[in-house]
Image (cartoon, rainbow, N blue to C red; front, side, top):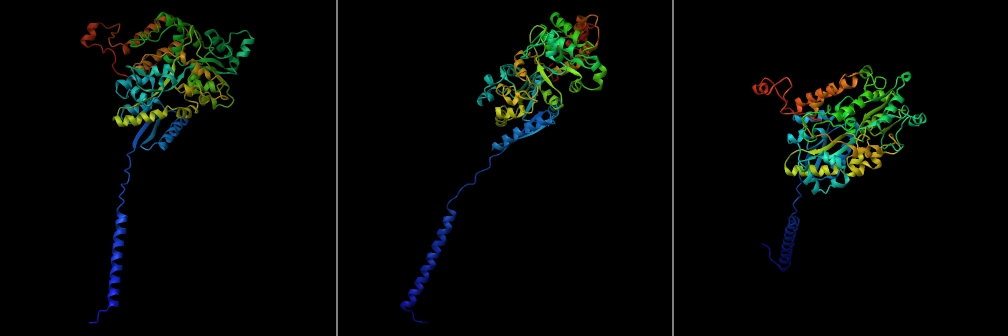
Length: 474
C-alpha cells in the first residue's frame, strides 16, 4: 500500500470536486429542460355544414366560390355545397331524407309547406344578433314574402319580377312611332295594353314567319294580366278556398288578354311549340316578345347577333306583376349548430358574396345595395334597360302562402292552356267559374261537389277535399 501524500490527496479531492460539479450541472441542465411545462393548444372542433342550392353551372360555381372564401376565413366551420339542376329535385331529396342540408335555397311557393313540416328555423333573433339590416337594405316586398307569424322564416335572397323580353329588331319602336302607332316612353318605365298589342301586331310578319307574343299558359303566366286589369287570382288573400277567375273583374281582364294571346296570327301555334320551346323561337329571331324572369338573361346573351331589351308587363289599368322569389332557410338543429349556420348565412347575404352571384347574370339579389350596383345592372350588356328589373319590384303582387301550390297548378293548368289555345269560347265567364269550382276541390276543406249532398259526404260516399300538400304557389 503506497504512502498517502499531500499531493496525491489534492489530486483525489480535485477529481471528486470535478465529478461533483459535473453531476450538479447535469442535474441542473436536466431540471432546466423539464421545468417549462407548456400545454399544447387543443384543436377546436370544426363544424361541418352543408348548403343546398340549385341552378345552372355558372350559378353553382358562384355559390362554390363564395363558400370557398368563407371556409378560408373561418377557423371553426367548414361548409360544403350540394346542388341540383332545379328546385323540385332538391326539395324531393330533402323531403325523402336523401339530403339533410343545414342551409338551403327555397322558392317562396314552398315556404308554407316547409314551415308546416318544421323544416326551417325562424330567423329574426338570429338576424338581429348579427345586425343584418333587413329593414333598410332589402326589398320590403321580399322581406314580407318570407315572413309570417311575426317572424322572418327564411332570409330573402333573390327577387326577380316577371317582365317582357323583346327582340329590338322585330319590335322597332322608332319605326312604329313613324307609322303613327302607339309606343311606350323612351325610359321604358311602362306601357299600356294598346301599346303592347300594337307591338305584337307590328312584329307578326307572315312572310318572315315571325310571331309577336307568347305567354306561358299557366296561372303565373296570366296572373299579371288579371291583377293589372282589376281582378284577383284567389277568393281570399290569406286563406283562399278557391280561385277567383270567374269574378267580374278577373273575367273582364282575361277577356281582353285572351283576345290577344290566343290570336293565331300573333302567337306561336301548337305545332311550333311541339317542335321547340318558345324561348328557342325567341332566340332564333322568330318570336318578338316573351314574358320571363332575370334568369333568362344569360341564355339570351349567349346567342350571337340577338338584340333584346326588357319592358315591364303591360298595364290593363295599373302596373302589376308577379315575381320569382327565393330565400335561404336554416334547418332545425342543436342551438350551437344553428348559430354556426346563421354565421354562414350572414356572409352569404353580404354585399361581397351577393355581388359574386349577381355577376353571373342569372340572379337578381333581394338586397337593394347589390341590385342597384353595377354587379347586377352590368352596363354595356343586354338588356340596355336592366334597371326595369328594379323599378317594377314595387308592383309585385304576392299570392297567398299555401301548401297546395304545385297540386293546384297541376289541377288547373290544362284548363288554362285550353283558354289560351281555343279560338272561341262560347261563355268565357262560365268556363272560368268551372275552373274556380275545380280549384275548390283542392283548397276548400269543407268542399262538397255540386253532384254530392252533405249526407253523401257524411256517409263516406265521397272522398271530399284532398289533404295532401305540395310546393309551389302560383
